[in-house]
Length: 163
Image (cartoon, rainbow, N blue to C red; front, side, top):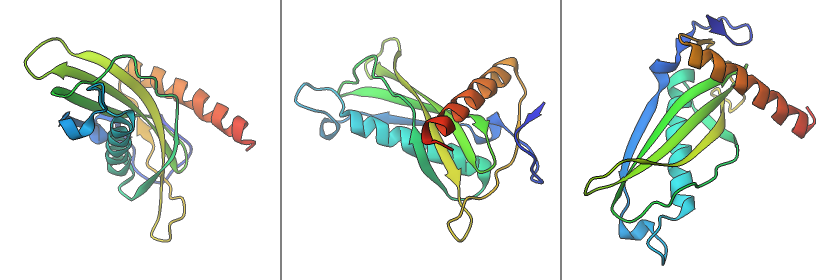
């Protein structure tokens, strides 16, 4: 199943653009409590979302919005952090990317969920105007569910912006 607005571009799968990034949290990344600065984690979320979006669109992209990002567990100095990003939904020039962040102690232990966020990226052409993106080829029931949920979030963002 291919899902998006009409496009002459060939569809691309979620797997083709998926990006993961691993990072070690070092002392310069943390606050006085030994926890990673939230802004550092969010900057990495933005970066891995960009990688995913640009892989899908095959062009430069910019961040249009960040949906709610609640930290549900702290990230400590010495933790290994994994950022996993996947496209959930595409519009004409925009792409919603779901990023999941997990952390685990470098000396071993079970990973723990740190946060999940949805980042909307917009593809740009050579003149820095919004560019059409390929349709999303949905291969699994989970991808179809995430696409439908993404369409609802995109519609809500448009309503909130008065568009």
